[in-house]
Image (cartoon, rainbow, N blue to C red; front, side, top):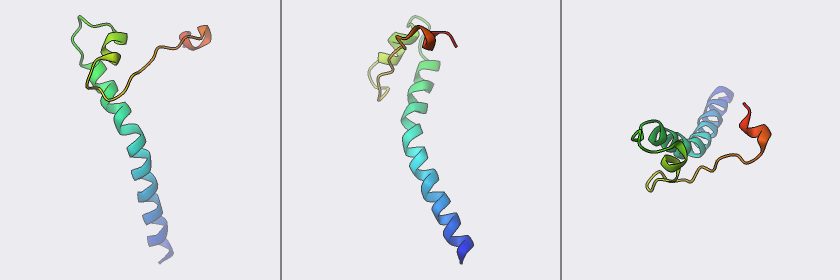
Amino acid sequence: MRVLTVLQATVERQKAELAVVAPKAKALDRIATADSRLSIAAAAKAPGNGMLIEAPTEPAALMV
């Protein structure tokens, strides 16, 4: 029974994690498949992607 409890907890944790990352994945997929006439910033702000992705403003964040 302990194994079943652990597995159920794992499934619930994974569902919660998926709920967080799914919108991000959808937005990144939309950016990756965007028309080449759009810049990355414009594609990120395009209506319908479900979220607004802002560019980093700190110089350290720009140098990856």
